[in-house]
Image (cartoon, rainbow over all chains, first blue to last red; front, side, top):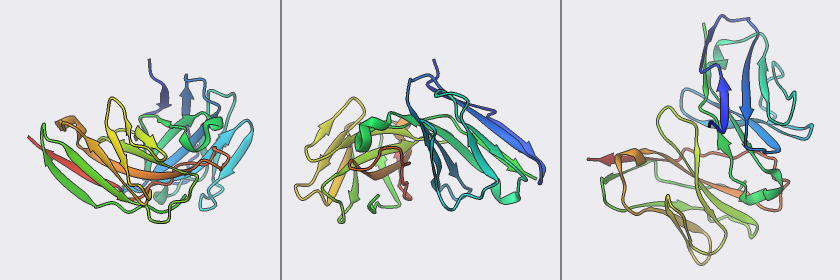
Length: 115
Length: 113
């Protein structure tokens, strides 16, 4: 059984469109995250979400917004897509209360290509 | 999270041990040392973590210097499947725990058959 799953695996779209990436975890974790890995392979945290508390990386444009319908899901909505949004997006989850020693479980990634 | 320094790449032969170093001279007393790896075309995966004592699990061993300013991830018998980018990350245990991981450039481990 997949612990952290993302859909779709690949997403190709035109500039200016609005798109969503879905993430689900079946680990019973209370915290979920979104990361972006650019073409140079740098991985950066975008958001973390726990019990309605959202922590945002200040460098993330407000065109990006996470939505959590329940504790097992954290979807990523992107408005007015730009060429620079092309990247691989990873979802992850963990237990918050284990603080510095919590391990995060990552999904397989969604490769977004903006044309 | 405090900064870590790793070699850009390392090469090893299959079935030999691999020692991946990490320097973290500005580590604080509440920082845990975590290692993750990312296999090609996959998401990162947790490998091991420790605070002060050396740690072993089914994937690897973590050797932590006495002053905690450096650590070494040890793969006892590397296989081709261990070819990946390995990230050394410090995690502050005094934090809220909901902040994300801060990835550096990591070490690209190449395994020769």
